[in-house]
Length: 241
Image (cartoon, rainbow, N blue to C red; front, side, top):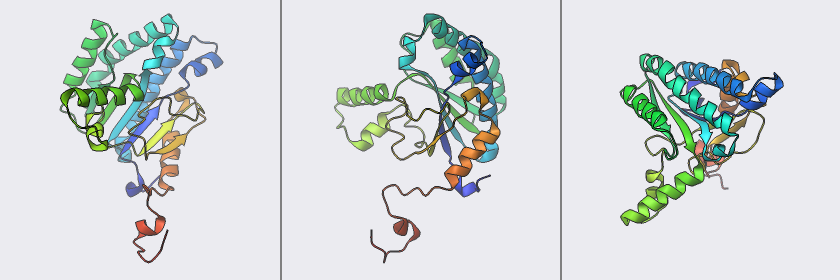
């Protein structure tokens, strides 16, 4: 287990592999998504004891609307059911829930469910859980830039960063992607500029606390330099790049 000072405060997760997990078991893809919800519950519960205070997950990308209609409809049903079933527990556990992404195209029932869940958990402070739903990194940047331009605000790195969907929290220290795919897939493109990336061969439904600890140990072994040299970080001013 990683030492406390080497543990990321904010982890972001691309929860990939639900459909493949189901296909390997000759189950409908929606069964994999249901199993993925159970995995998310376990990982969220495991984070506070590991000194992680923010978790951001990629639940539904803006590109996922291109999937088969029955799968998209099933995902919406899962979201609605999960909200009604899990919000009371999240509230008891001190988890604050936020949904990040466009709400255009969502049904009135889903929109109300998102709003009610956010309101019910707004005062919680043990863990922040950001669910990126109907989200894309390019959408996030373009929307922020358009908002600044409309207000007459100069577009700088600082102003754009403050206009993004996750401006209320720090950038992710660690990005975990399951399913053995090695790309970000339009997830938090701005915010992950200096994040450490960890790719797991496990499909998301198989990712557990031991897999989380393996990712944290790998993170703890890395040196985050943010453009500096190792000598600069260690305070060795005599050393040259």
